[in-house]
Structure formats: C-alpha cells, structure tokens
Image 1 (cartoon, rainbow, N blue to C red):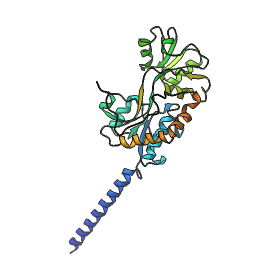
Image 2: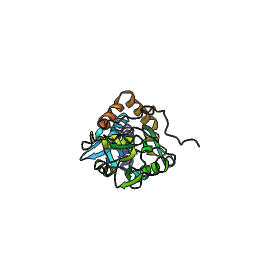
Image 3: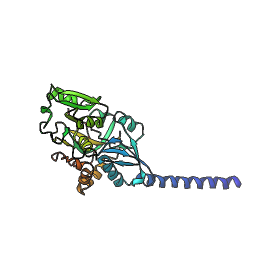
Image 4: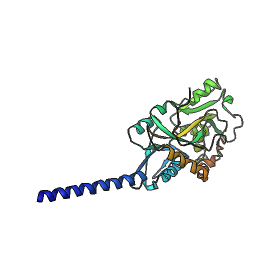
Length: 282
C-alpha cells in the first residue's frame, strides 16, 4: 500500500515539475525570466562604449530598443565585449545571443551567422580638421598623410583606387589616429562615416574635427545572430518601429550629432522586410 501511495506522490510531483517547466518556458520565450546577452564594442565612442558601469552609443540604444520590443527590460541585458575578430565564434559558441557592433553584413559572414537588419548603412569616409578646406574626398589625398588602424584595409583601398601617392600611417586604434590628426601629424583619418562621427563627437574633439561627407562604399550594419535563428522578423519589426516613432533619429542625434555628422539620407533610415539578410546574387 505504501509503495502504491509513493508511486502516486512521485507521479504527482512529475506532473507539477512538468507544469512548472512549461511555465518557465513561456516566461523564457517572452523574456520575463531571462538574460539577453548582447555583444557590443567597448571602445567606439558614439556607437558602443563602456564608460565605467555605463554603456553608451548608437549601437547600444538600438539594442535597448530591440530588446524592449522582444520583451526584455534594461536590467535583463548583459553587455558582452565583442571584438571584431571574435564575433562569428561568439555567436556560434553561444557566448552571446545577438551582436550590435558595427557588424557589416557580408556574403562570407552569412555562411556562418544570420543577420537581421540592417539598422544603419554606413560608408567609408574621411575625418579632417574643422578648418581643412583642401580635402573633400579620397581623390584629394595624393601627397597627404592618411591614418587608419593596423590591419585595416580601408586606407589601402584609397591608395589602390583613388590616390596612389597617399602616405599611409598606421596606429593601434582610431583614437590614436585622432590624436595624430589633432597634432597635425596626419591630414586625415579613414574608416566608416558614423565611426568617424563618434570620434568627432567626444568632448575632447567637439568642434575640432569634421567628417567630409563624401562616402565611397556601403557598409550594412546588421544584428548578428546564431545561424538558423527565428528572430529576424521580430527584430526587423522592432527596428522599423524605432524608425517610425522617431527614436532612431533621436539616437543618431544624441550620440553623434555634436560632430555635425549628416548621414546618407538616400540609404538611411532603413525600411526592412520580414526575413533575415540574404547573400547577394552572383
């Protein structure tokens, strides 16, 4: 009799546990009891930047908006530093759930990860001193000193395609390039326009520098996701809503407006469909 009673208790406990698990699963899907791990850059002012306990920048503001639309509160976001070289591995290994980190969508990356978005379309540009009236684009750089970071291909692209006589200067970071620019050691710095705008918008550089505003590439910043995700539709809807409500524009102004940056209005803001980004047609 005791054995029969014990079996009943065990069965009831199993049912209770299953019900609790089902409830937990529902809460998890809505973000109520979960942490959302979002990969960002920690060293890009105006985009993704760690300032003590705070995380600031356009990327982080878009990420917060998307997270809220997915059902997560600010307290449920765990910010994870995601260096460029590690992003695909971090998504594949489950170290992060999504990445907002000036992460350009490319056919090569689409082989291993998925992308929602893009949430911003950037372009390679030049940062110069505010009173520089000689440099309007990459064709004006012959005989000039151009700075970019070690390992970047952006400066070499200018040398190969626009100004064969440009002198290339490499630094460990774009912040180091800006120090050289302010000191008159180089004539220009090159990378994506909004990254340059973020550097120009810092308190130390405000009013000292300007983005030329003549982009010559297109870089589609997407939301990096694990391969085979089912979240692209919801994320794209959130980005569209951010645009429609004016919050996207506010985030741009808040984070890089002090630099005088004007984004390419023919390409931005984005208007997205339901699906993940697809490889370009050959």
